[in-house]
Image (cartoon, rainbow, N blue to C red):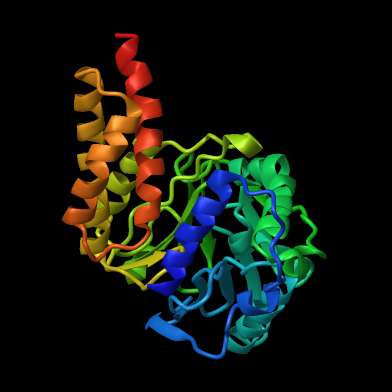
Length: 324
Ligand SMILES: [Zn+2]
């Protein structure tokens, strides 16, 4: 799939920390396309990325009797304006809320256009992480990924509400649950769910039919990814038996897709642990495990992230093993 392969290319770019600025600004291609909206459950709308455009996330809008919640904004104010306009079309004069799954630019850097238009809600750890890392990510994306134009007017606006671990929003006949679950993909990962509809929104904790995106960017002091807690989050989400699993990127999934992703994490964790115990080094692990994982999931995207995933597990599991 084009988008996810392109994301893999982004990973390579970030990991290699290329210093050559992108030759062409492609911000215009990164706009959320709100012309097509899928109603995945009554009153639950998703603007899908449709695997077509790099750095465009799935955006969800949940509409209740009295209010609507927008989850994620797209990359920068221009996408944010499109999403806000769509939310207004879907919700009419109802009160609007906005939250974002995590601080990464394509998910939350359009939030400023919602200020004064919607009640903006963040979990504490996401807001803290945005303040700590947001500027570095903005610089990196602007300089390396050709989206300087999309990000040039970005401001980080303070939320109207900050919660610690869990919150609920009553949209009128429909409760939405917000849970601060990180650290996993980021320190401030948030899971948003609509229990009455069996819907869960996982941001980049989950990409359907894809190897996981495990950010490991010591060059910008971001090594907070936690694969062990990540697996625990999947376990918790699985217990709620969702029927619609909305990923950060890629097609909308089901519980079986989430279970496949969880089994993959279990396999990598077990393999890395065993290989650590046997004294295998990271390079050999990556060399041997990568073809095995590709063969297990020949249809999965983002295989370029496998080496990084093994490194992250190695960092967490092998350092523990060496102290035992
Ligand atoms: Zn992300």
